[in-house]
Image 1: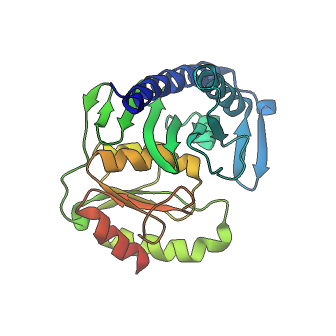
Image 2: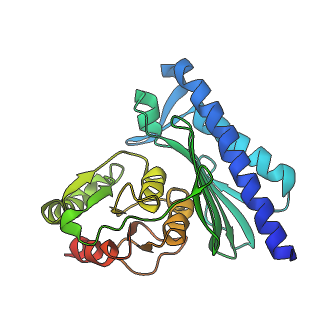
Length: 265
């Protein structure tokens, strides 16, 4: 095994361990969440002590094996550094769901090498579902290979989305996008955890997804998964997706161009 392959295999195993460990802690803390554990970072942007504890767990596990790697988490934030090995973490995606006991949230972790995601891990502790992928080798749900859906036409498709709740000044444009996709697709779902939505596109549970404003920790692992599963991803207008993209449009290979056309109008 080459040095690169050994490093990637070790990173894949570590990512799986990290999201499982953090996810189990997230789930065990759900019943004990108190009002004083919740704060608002900004309008409609909530954080709990559980988000912070989960990020600490992820950071500890990663730094324990790869102390020289960089770590970018939602709760510590900051700019995307130009570095060789960068772990990108959303310690609790779907915090608002979590606060209300709505069972759709996850822990997401990706390893980007020189600005390109190579490893992705998303764990849904409520369903004990681990989505795991490695570039050029495949994607698995609880160790079973998965792929995007075979839906050929958007008028038969189930499309996921997310509302720009933190940027309501952009709501008019989003509502126009929503109206076009609503009229042109079979149905739309908004579940409130973008990383898990992307995993659902990769596994064929959704045929496509778009959200105009997301952060890198929402998209890095799930975007890689969609490509690994045979799908396509683009930025908020359908152009090439990068770590610094503002949003995402994605779907299976047939749905993606149709969804891009609808979103762009």
